[in-house]
Image (cartoon, rainbow, N blue to C red; front, side, top):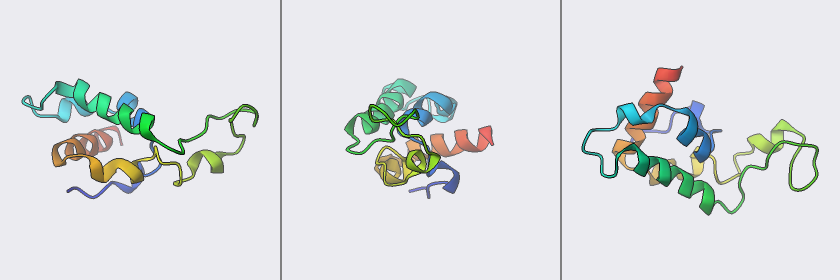
Amino acid sequence: MIPMPPALAYWTADQVAECLPYEQHLPADYEGGWQALYARLWSFLSAAQSPTPLGGDGSHGTVETPGERLSLANDDKAVHWWERLTHTEQYAIHAALQQEA
């Protein structure tokens, strides 16, 4: 297992799926291609019991303060799902995060 990069702790699964170029770091024989990892990341978001609330005015389940959006208690954050990834998936995301830094 690859240790989770500290910079990734506050990223939600959908942010990783949509914003990091992990597909170029997956091996050619990764089963299902990059779309499989994309779907897996979105599945973590779908399964979250306490997902990160959307920003807004505080109505309809939204929150006004960054602290509520940055809470690591929100289980769609990487700290909750990183260890469920395979070594190959962790490597691809880690490399993509480094590439973007």
